[in-house]
Amino acid sequence: MAEVMENSSVQLILGMAREKAVKHILRVLDFDNSLCQFVKSQVDLSVGSVFSVVPSDLNAEDIADFSWGFGKGSDNSLSDRILRTLKLNAASIAIFDDVMGSAENVAGHDSCLANNDEVYHWVFDTEAAELKLRDLIRETGVSWHFLCVVFESDKSIDIKDCVTNSKYDLFKNILEVVGAYDGEGYIHWSPNNVEGVRPYDT
Image (cartoon, rainbow, N blue to C red; front, side, top):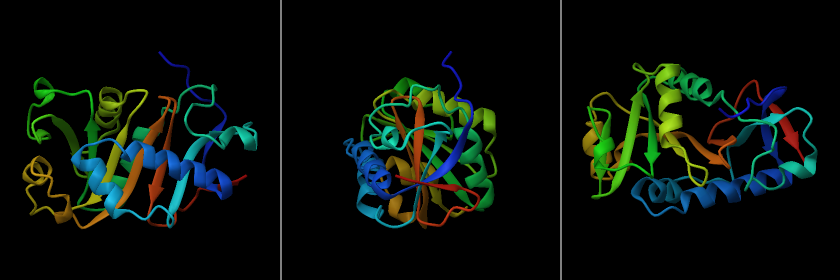
């Protein structure tokens, strides 16, 4: 089991570090599947908030490249942050990109196979629980790719049909994009200002 990152806090990423974080998010979205390509075409990463869990004793230059972790343990609080976003936004849904998944991983009403070989899982705001989110994070994350996208949805939308047929434009808005670096930490992008997050500027 990976060591847990201690003495850390959620911080806004600003300045040069923000530019590096945005480049890393774009690398995550370079993966050739329908969810990545849709998000990349829809979000304007030059605006909004970029934030991450950062060790409190981190030197500024150490956050200037997000292609590897901090070597100070893993961020295990992501499930709580996604849960908070879902609970704060009624009719929202978190979709997880399972790049290593196969048809055998698709079961139940909250998973599907799209475009023959793309596997996705999702959680509604009303069904979200930290344990379920933690399981999805563990199951879908690999060291070289992790993507969770929180959409504002509508209860009348057939989620499985939307995801299976790549009709993401039927969702109202993208509320948050989460990408990982080196299996240790996560970068969040939100179109909105994030309250209660301390700024971090190089």
